[in-house]
Length: 602
Image 1 (cartoon, rainbow, N blue to C red):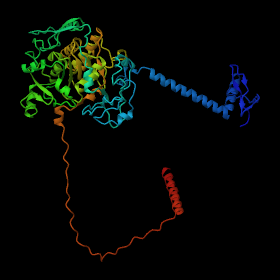
Image 2: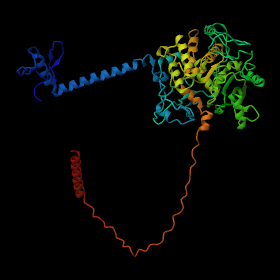
Image 3: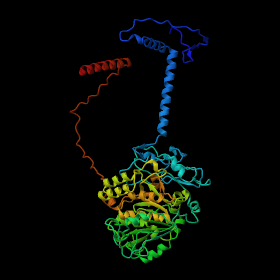
Image 4: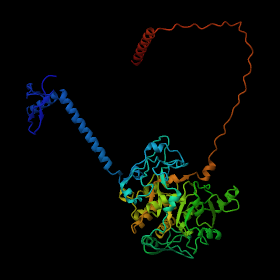
């Protein structure tokens, strides 16, 4: 390359400084300007622009200048990409005013467990921990349903949510535990359980509060009793839950120190005794003796198969009440199938037969024990409700410590694994035929007129408006009892789809008092319950076809054939080609083949 390089420009006026090349200080040297005939395409005023472009092209071709320009361009591109990535991370992941599924589902603290550790964990194994006394279960099961499921690519944190949760005590063994990202398994899609840090049962019991939690504002809650319920409006209510007017409904959300509200069982002074949803006196007496923790479930309409809890400690066997509510149809099936023989115990469950059910719909009847356990078990302190299709696989003390006591919470429920907006939930219910569309539309429109809006990040630290309501963990204090009473009243007034009415009741109460709900990850719920198929689906499933073993008879012996008529010709051994001959022949073959392809193409 001929010529010398330009100096370094230091000022805006283009003054040059001497440049060192190969450790030698080069003097200034100007490059002669080659005069060219101006092109007809350029006007006279653009001659200097043309010369300037010529100089740039001339000097850019030199090695040092070209390398310098390449480095400058690379740095600029790198900085622009880096700034774009940082802006994307800082920007809100909201589309049309709604949070994305990834943002709402991904809630976790800083990672402390690698993905490789999670992939190496098999069912019924513990997560590695620096504290040997801490059990970190990864879930011992897979869901057997959820055909329309999503891969739960979650467990990253929204900072507002992590700030909202109270910090653990410094001595808590699970203080540094964080949910790792799910294993990268393309073959397995859909929601899955994730690791949960459980304390050993003995330590979990030690964290059990000695006194009931304080109920904000509300101290005394009583319930409406009406010998004869009178319908005052054309829509909503029932003989079992009463017919509260819209004014009574609105007044029930005005939280006061003492309140009297509708909460089912309006016809009797004692729930279960001539109130609808009637229970035998012996069972009622036994239920009154449950003063600590109750685990309850129900099967109505012979809809499910009873599931036995697993991994239950001796402390829970002695102190926790396990109650399964069934109707007469389910009782008849269980007795005919020898599941229920004479007594009222099936494994861990004490079976209670409910008579005079208040509703024709079995699913609506199931909402009575689900939402009104505090009325049935008036002396219990804590309750865990699980749907009849679920199998409990973690000890109740560990569940309560993890989702209530550790977070200073009084009510916990998992959020839906896929949907977090009420409007989306309503559309999904209509598409699946869960309830008639007109009733769903009426309910959603009613809530819209009251101010219901799509879920957005403005609701943080609330992470979802739609729960996965098959599990409810609750401390029985006035404010939580009021919440489930008013939630039941919405189910009684509108549709039985409790996911639609959940957020309306929650938000109305939270706007009046300092109280919140722990909506934990759905993958954490799947860690301590296993979801099974409903009974009718199991019966309609065709069993696998039996393996057919086909035994072929031995082949018949062929008669001997004389070999005199045939002459055996020994195959001639072809001479092997030498290396050069093989290579040359293969080259010729390739050339011929190439020529044939070209001829066929044209």
